[in-house]
Amino acid sequence: MADNMNYQIVTNNPNVKDSYNQVIFVEGSFEDVLFKVRDLVHTGFELINHPLGASIRMFFSPYRSIIIGEKLQKTNDIHIETIENSISNYKKHMKVRKPDIVNAEDYALIDSELLKSSLDEFKRIYN
Image 1 (cartoon, rainbow, N blue to C red):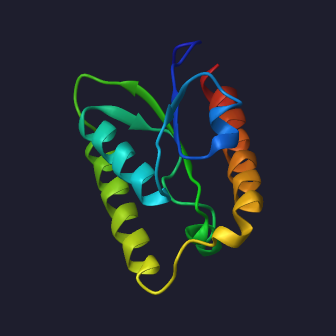
Image 2 (image 1 turned 45 degrees about the vertical axis):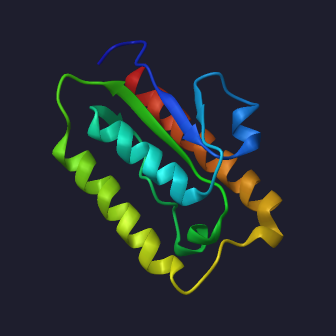
């Protein structure tokens, strides 16, 4: 793999927006971030980390940061299936719950830490 693999972060987390350069900031919800990533994956961008959080509890976060890689010449069917299934699962779980806005600051911090961990792993593998 290339030593300088390009990536971008698609997020609605203000903490992430202010901490990284390669950000596509989404003014909106966790679901809006999923939709933006879906649109990018359908044009050939790679998914680097999983679109959903590490646990069911993270579904209730108002924030999500997802890493996408380089735009390829063709779409990756596995990445398309992953993002489409992630959107379906998110919608299914959120039919009965709303985002936990009361703990938004905590969720923003958790999302930032999960992103940092994913980026560290990504850089370890690709650099």
